Image (cartoon, rainbow, N blue to C red; front, top):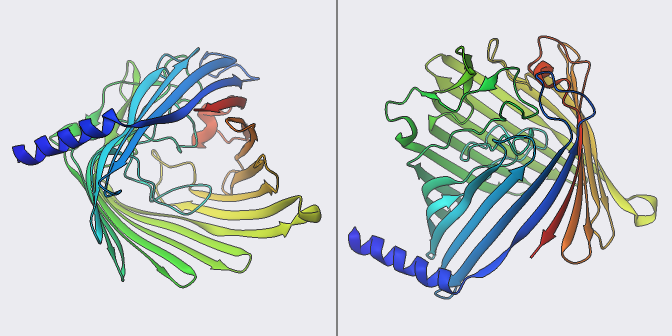
Length: 387
């Protein structure tokens, strides 16, 4: 064991010595037209940096990747944070890859919600859409076979979810505590296990997965001062992914079955994207998106997407600046609450990118989980510079 570990560290040091540096720096301005429901900050400035070192050697059979992330935020002390997004060594064999270290792994196919994406913890202070993830320590064996690819993961350490602070926006009415409660006796050091099979069958992409360990999504339980305490339950999660391509149609489905100490539940999100190509004389491609979100968990821990219809469109401009626009509205069919998201981006020169983002809440019912952020509409402009 010591010989293997020494060899790994030596290989890592050798790779770092000759690594190449790339990454991005970003400046973000967020405009919030309404006062926060809990006296949070107003318009906000933020700066971020994400450098990456990487190196391949041994004829490409070995790789070392190091990715750091840091943000300074004007209004929310908790959003000012640093994270090790990735630090892993990969060894490739003829029909297998071994990964050791900290990685980001994405599972999922749908547009509006990623139910099966369970490996990495959400970095919620970054964005409400839960797309930003913390690095996950793991050991991964990836096998490639004729009948499909298999990923086996052991995760020896759990990352807690980040939450906005007292002055932060888009947070519950009560502040979420830094402390947490775990069902697992070993708390963060309880080993989590996951396995996933994926395969392409003609026009269909399929994947099935299972996870056992501390749930990445905590229950928030009221506990006096400071307000809410995250409870991380041990859970079994079985997931299914399916994607079917037929002409201009793209059909997608994600479904999960959960089983924990408080019972079982099911959730699914599915729908389609239909693309109209070369609209307006080849100016842009237009994608029409429709998805339905279902989750049978009830109060007091009901999710946002429990019975919601999502309608939207995607514009992909056929220009050298790679301009794109994605907009959708999620409508709760039970109470009429609405959430609208707009995301647009365009390259500036060879090393720049400008992104525009908007989040809007309307007709939010008092019983809806979005009621806490009903006054947190915002428009965000971000400039990224790549190096």
